[in-house]
Amino acid sequence: MKENIMKQATAQKQECSSPSLQPSLRCYTLAFFAPRLLLMWFICIDTFGQIPVINTPQPSILLPNGTVGNQPNNGMSIPNNSNNQQQLNVYERDKREVQQRDAELYKALYGEETRSISYDLPSAANYPGAECYRSTRSLLDNMIKGKTPIDLKKAVFAIENAYFNNKLSYDDFDKQIEQSVRLIRMKMQQKKINPNDNYAKNMLIFSFMTDTFTVKDKSIERTIVHNPIKYDFNDYRGANDWSKMFVSKLMRDNSGQCHSLPLLYLILAQELGAEAYLSFAPSHTYIKIRDKKGSWYNVELTSGAIISDAGYLDCGYIKSEAVKNHIYLDTIGKERTIATMYFDLANGYIKKYGYDEFVIQCVDSSLQYFPNNIFALQLKADWHTANCMYVKRQKGNPTVEEFKRDPKANELLRKMQMMYQIIDNTGYEQMPEEKYQRWLQMLEEEKNKPENQTNRIHQFIR
Image (cartoon, rainbow, N blue to C red):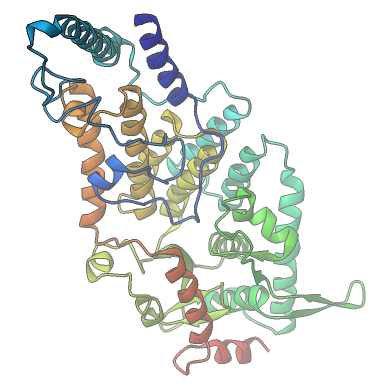
């Protein structure tokens, strides 16, 4: 019997120790389900991945007072008729066997076996391709620490290349970017636009990405036409194919979403020497630019429009505290943009290998240079949740009270709760997926409103 009990306990531990290679990933912005501890404790949490399915503890195994199995005063009547001594003996024998079984199970889960519980998520450092992620993290470290110049083009390529085990060609990636930059510069020359006019350069980038862009190439005596980049609604969160999030995919198919579109815009701005900024909204990223008078405009690439701040506030999921704490509608400069690249790097890693120490290292690096990065905060909460659930599964899914009796496990639980509290304090509110889709449609409608500047921009370009 003891052998069977130990085999069951060992099987449970082996089951929960292997990392999930197919985590359920959401869009760039969604890493955060179940913001309350009790929900996380009693149901399976569908965050980025590697969180085992949690089964609710059954009273027959774990009782409220922490005891295991059937106890002496359990409501069963013990036969006391002297004529039924044989039945009493059978009952006592069965009771002893149940108690022995439960005692050995408890010992296996919480006694001697406790020493073998791992409080750290399994490492994927030795998995094939994981070294590509470590070298990319070093590249980001050098940029953000000032050891090498900040280069968003190289950073984005390195992150996407790591996902493909460094099998992509940087020369091909660079050539595609340079072709786009060349067309925009040719348009500036033909329109006789001052190459130092920052607003004009931004308007040309916007037109290149959102409108039919025509340029006469005198060297080949032909007119080159670049079609507008479309929004890719097919798997736009990258749940089935993570490369859907990539700039390289966008350039190949001329379609992208709210992660890849702003990144391509910023890369083109970098290559043209234009000033532009990344900005966050719920489950969303977009671009902010300034005109010559210092007025700010929101470049919404998913709908090909200039959207007012009110257009983003209308989504209903931006609280005043969130704006005050600069997690939404704020300008994100070059250094903080590179800080967000750690988040992207961690996401690709999770998709391939699950959660381990590499993920939390990336998140901590991101938060060091961008402390109010809401997406990195969410991912850190997810990481601590995965760690808690990993330990919880090894312990046989105990109650909260049982879990807290282990000092190491209790400290993991405290850190998890603290991260959820930090996120709550920012004013963050989760936007459901169906609400996000409706909001995207609303942004499409926003471009037709008089206060938005699309017509003015198109007149400027043409």
